[in-house]
Length: 149
Image 1 (cartoon, one colour):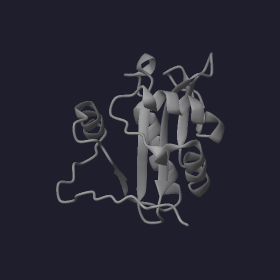
Image 2 (tube, rainbow, N blue to C red):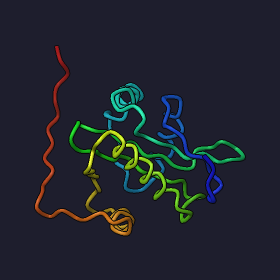
Image 3 (cartoon, helix red, strand yellow):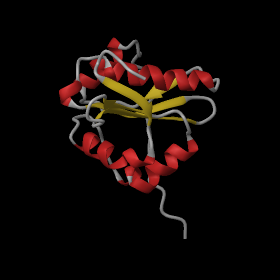
Image 4 (cartoon, one colour):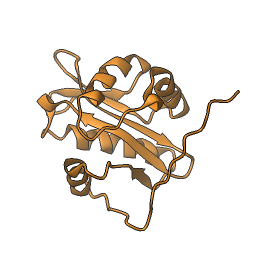
């Protein structure tokens, strides 16, 4: 699908991994870990078909933006939204979010959450401008799980 931003939007494919990893690695406010390995991202995409999207240049097919979207059956979750610096301020991030939310709505999910690193002021500003609300009544707690033996 075409847009005024000079990009086309399509589903995130496993073959997009290397370009997405490069984009995420170069983007402030994106926290990467072993959970973002090729194998884990491919597994994520397989468990959440049709929910994650990329934006690619119409002329050169280079990655301009990406978002991972998943679902636990009740709530959706967006991860690693990033837009290449050369393509920012063109609505690409907002369009990627809209497509992910539309895909969630299509499977009956009516609420979505995001995780924003606390000191990522630009990220907080973007999300609030998109209509997302800061939830101060919740805390995120995490625990590493050792590999199965």
